[in-house]
Length: 107
Image 1 (spheres, helix red, strand yellow):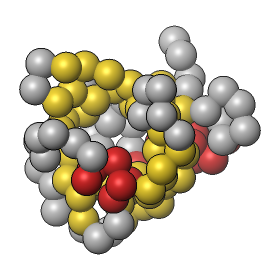
Image 2 (cartoon, rainbow, N blue to C red):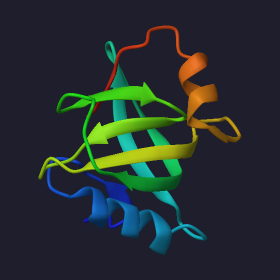
Image 3 (cartoon, helix red, strand yellow):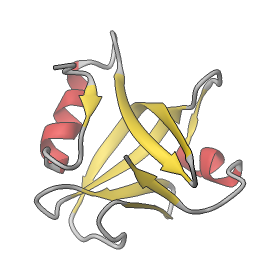
Image 4 (cartoon, rainbow, N blue to C red):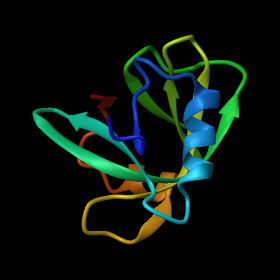
């Protein structure tokens, strides 16, 4: 089992937030996401826990300045900074603005 891979199916927002903090220096944490038929991994750099979900389960939405994802227990993790494959670390809003389609899910 790869401890640096985040899995909203089995982990709560608190568990994933603590994993991001624990692995921030090395090796970092990753989240598998899909956009249409494309499956890829993003490196999750900064997160926080939110009280109320706005996204539906498996859906990732941009709210304010972060990407929200609903976890296994209904808790919400907000991704504030991330790194897409082959790119630099960026704010979640910048990543979202660069997407061709605004429909993304965790995979």
